[in-house]
Length: 157
Length: 335
Image (cartoon, rainbow over all chains, first blue to last red; front, top):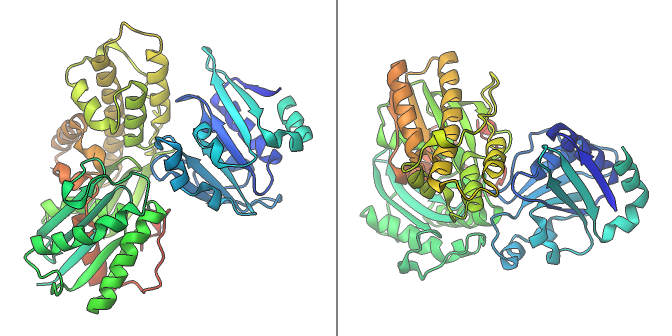
């Protein structure tokens, strides 16, 4: 199992930043975890790792927010989606999320478990919080097989 | 006198309004997916931009008729339409409709920033308000403190670094099993509860004017999980009091660093009773005029878009027909 423990919000963000090195253009990352688990915090870290200059805030209301990236692994856009408000799979389909994922983009989808059937292969990051304020990050999904080394490095950091 | 037709379809409301150049609202129609009007055949799915397609024409026709105008030849002098920020599919419906009307009636039209629209809402009720104006704009999608020396001259002093205020309401309401939208139900419950029974961390105590509500949301989850002994009303009261306190503290700081003669609330969360009372008290204490718009002016509407459009059109801001929807249009980029 690929997992990483974070003791604070800063560490969750750092884990996100390091996770950017695992990503390749076209990737979809589904984020799972209850309210307040740290999904947006993790995305903020990934955004930093991908060289997003602007502020990354919760996209719940606009549902999807694109962010331009500057990095050397070919990702030009980070799509940050949050399907919390989407009550059903039909509503997620209405968002046409799959249309967004161009060859040079990656998509991070909060409350992604709802959206899983919409996508093909993806990475799923599940964040659980403990009583001490720490967070456990677990990575699963079909794309794990193709990223074993990078993910092992990420988990060991 | 000049008058502008405003059209707003940035999220789940389809709205149209006619506003005169002296900022008198001649009509304002809002078709909401929350308050489903039977006139238009029922449900407007919250997320489907194409639902606006079905409602835009009857909404615009009714706004023109309500203003005493002929919907075929309305005799207006311009059209204003929300071009962003918002859901791209929803924005495109209003934008395309406005372009078609502008072309058919040979009228100038202008793409308006939705947030600038919110900033004009207080002027519709108080056209003679004194500048400079400090506005606390709080809604489901945005939370910011904006300083304006005059109409259209805005400076964003601070904004949320994570969740919007209204979003925090919605998420906490969902966590507590209170349904959507969260603002009205939490506000109502809070009146019956006591904030003192569940102290919550205040968050974001820094000296800057940025806002943060994610920590408060998480604190409510942590403080309430597995607790059957807590009264929902007390949780609601504590959450609301803590959120309002943060907003008021930041607003006070903004007012202490900037010379403003008026303070206004805007956006859907401006309907919140704790916030309204707090802003009124703060304004009285600091000797500035408070403008607390009616609920219909706080939430998304097209009169505010028409008002912003009147200003933009009067200052040479007509848009070309090639204008695209701008889903992430930052208020700072509005010149």
